[in-house]
Length: 67
Ligand SMILES: [Cu+2]
Image 1: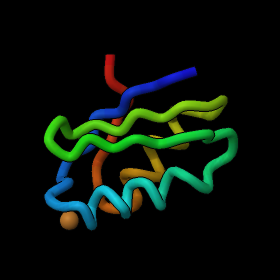
Image 2 (image 1 turned 45 degrees about the vertical axis):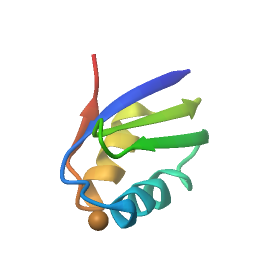
Image 3 (image 1 turned 30 degrees about the vertical axis):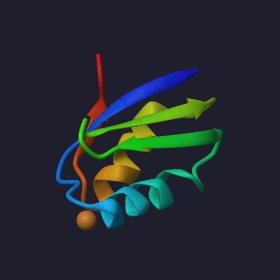
């Protein structure tokens, strides 16, 4: 599946890297694309959306599934 998350507080490419690093190790995640300007992260794979949102939030960027 592909899920878009709204991600708050990302301000630079360091933030983008931090979000990617938080999501990539999670179970079932195949790829992560982060859009700094759009304030979103798009995750592909077979994962638990709540766990992904929680991991991004725990990294300092409050996140929730979009739509
Ligand atoms: Cu930053």
